[in-house]
Image (cartoon, rainbow, N blue to C red; front, side, top):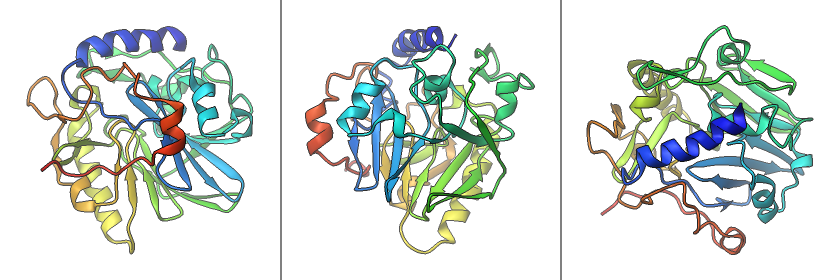
Length: 289
């Protein structure tokens, strides 16, 4: 079902969000010497590399060009043994489903025990204010189920697991080596700062806002700068920018919250090229002047 769901999203989401200036993913490339990403239409998957180990964050769509674009980063899918899953939506886990290319069939996947209830059928993922039910995710990968605040050590990579429910009931973000926070679909960056993620796709928008408040408090208690990296709208290390509008929703069909730099149709990725991936660093999000 994942392959069909990926293609359905590619067509329906393209039509639905075309011209809304909502999705501004990073192109394939490197943020710095440790963090790289692949662009899959409107979404990003990320890789954290340290001391010869690469941890993957989210698995993206059931996307035919994933192996090709990972090659632009000189990352072999066969070397990926650990995949952190923020949540189980198609654009974050499609490459692990049974009808995918099974590039990562030998990798362990890590997700919150609450999020796993979608995958066991105990809960059903709903979007558009509970009207539409998404297909159930099916994968044969070995799972490691996580709890809020749990600390992982994967070959010397320290990973702190932080539960941020709202977009999904078990959405989790990952703070790696106290420097990089991978937020999945928790924060949406517009031209003037961060908002709670897209309202029409959340299980509970009020819960999303409360989770953002707790996340901000958590991050502000820590020393040093943290790169806050989103699944669809880039990254920043400016906490004020990231949480500027955390009590507000990105509501594309009600209030005109948008990013004028976002492409007209994020599902057209002609500007994502191997040459850029190899030569251009991915700049952080800045407030539009």
